[in-house]
Image 1: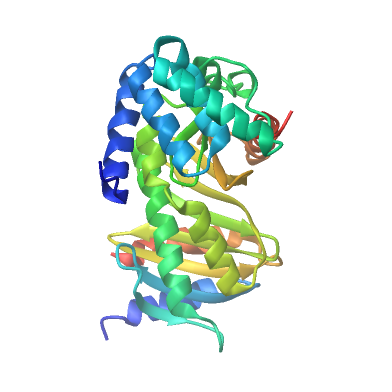
Image 2: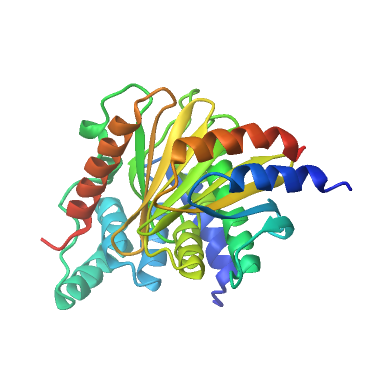
Length: 204
Length: 116
């Protein structure tokens, strides 16, 4: 079966939508896991395949392979938590009602965290899709201007302040805080969430 | 004559200490509409990337249901890029670390009305 970039993107979108609707969807999680694996994102692949493995024999076999490669590369998988725990990774750090945090890979796929809109819909994947390549754009802009590495990107909106920050392995952190939150507290929240993401992604 | 308002807008923002370049850029195509730049700046690339960043940040905020995007600030080790958008245009300012961000923000939000 030919696997083109376009078909891969379409499948990733479909699988991400399936997982958003049903986080226990083993087939979609296996698909996302294999996509991460093909892109060399072993840590993310391990997390998706681990979530799918109990209900999916093929995912379990893939998980064994990914773990062998992670061991060979000297990189440990993420802590042995369920996929639902990855979505809850930042919850203990989010003090204010309305705070939210996401960890996205370079393609805008959600690695950890969760985001629900005012109606309670999971919009994490939709947010991530809009941020594909944002870290690369920021890096290139700073290079053209000779301003050094980018540290944060913040956007004020009607209801929130959204802050992006670079994270390990070309991932991007997104933190949203209420629009009236003091700037200093937002910065501290970004630092805490960034530290948690780095710990979670780091080898054991 | 039609771009005279943009000239005044760029001059207003450019008067803030530490601001080295100001541009009005199309949000979707990243093309420069008008700019006040120092010599040697690769303005085309900067304009395209600034517009792309603003567009992505604004659309992600829209996907989150946060409403209209306002002031954007990209901080780096030796300076920052600020942007505000309206009516398909983005006002961009490049500043060094001496620039008082509060003044830049006020000047840009005030000037945003001139975009359209």
